[in-house]
Image (cartoon, rainbow, N blue to C red; front, top):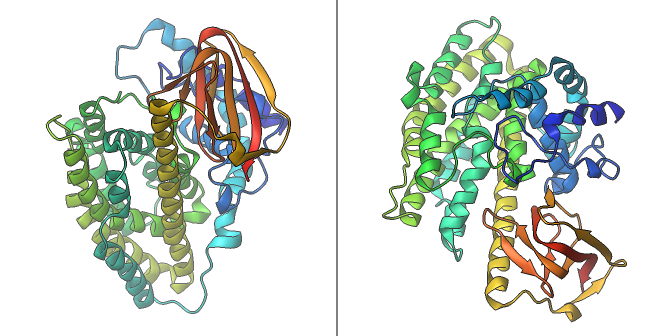
Amino acid sequence: MHSIQQYLSSPAFDLPADLLPKTPWNRPFRRQDLGSVDLLGPLAASELSTNRSLAIHRILLNIYEQSMLFLPQRRFESHDLPSFRAFYDPDNVALGQSNRVALERAAFSFLDDHEIKVTGKWEWEHLEQYFLGVIERYEEEPCSLTARIDALDSPTTAYRYLLIQQASDFLSEASAMGRAMLGSFGATQSELMKVFIDEYGYGVHDRKHSTLFERCCSSVGLDPEPHRYYFHYLPSSIALTNYFHHVCSNKHLWFRYLGALYYTEASIPHFNKALSRALRRAFEGAGVDTRYFDEHVHIDQHHRRMVLDDVIRPTIALCGAQVIPEMVIGFESFRLLQGLADRDYLEQMAFVEDLERSRKGGFKVARRAYEAVDAPLAFSEPSGEISYSHIHDHDELFTVELGSMEFFAGITPVVLEAGDSIIIPAGRLHGSRVINEPCTYRVQKVRRR
């Protein structure tokens, strides 16, 4: 634990002067949480939307990405150099790597220990039938996520927030896959390279998938700078990105990577077709650029065939049926993580909409509906003070007594003033910034009667 604290003492993890980092190398961490958060104990699936999960996955993301180059889209200024050097400091990078395996166990061991079990004897024909059957049943149903978003009060707000969750991966798309390309593993290496090259637009920057995603973000008013919205990443969204780095970084998990790769390549066309249509409906007349999603509808029809027939099948022929259970675990692990991320995102959007409805009607809580779990805690903060995004593992009654603050659960804050009260549900990401000092507020753990 001490070495993790030492790793997080780097200036790269300092809290920013503003909520949104101005460079891709400022990755804030709430160091005050270190004393109360167990970073090494294994997470359960039910803990993915907790502050402990958020802390573990934020640290892991940065450990992985310190081996990847990020440069801002704008001109590189001289004052950027200290941040650049701090993030890529070789001693700190080495310290992070020394903690990586322990953090990976904490983040993903539940997939082995409790969630994913493969029994019975499997051959290639069983695997093919199973994979194709799962995807076929998935494609028979309308996209449930876009249907749920369309039913919200403000679909445009929700779709912007969804793009932010995707940005942790899509703005550096296929970077985890790049870890899987090195070495010498026969013809499957060359077949996999074909998929990798597609992701990078065959060397044409305008066709690179991350470039297409940048344009989509810009077209709906989002900043396409990598990790500009780091403050807003849900832990479940970071977990999706981290899982691919995890299975690509650890070569003993190679066969799991192939299963996870097939699931994402095979499931994307159905989802992206629905999302492209939904974005055009939500932003009708606003010139939304959906080429990123449209391209995946086309190219991933080919990729899923290539991965199954030209990578997975010859790998089984070479290594034997003994590797099939690992492929099934990878396939089901990413499928499970995606389902958990969808649920986490929808619950966050429900909280955002509850706040917006409260704003219109006044921030008042029916206190008789709740009972206190402990005594309230009082805080007083100056103007500009930031409480960086975090999660409570219990419902919390939050009351402003003096001054005012911006409260963030989604992209756009609500302003809480003296006398305003809200309930912050357990598991919901939030943060704040004081805008009128002194700001005094009270927090208290509560539960519904």
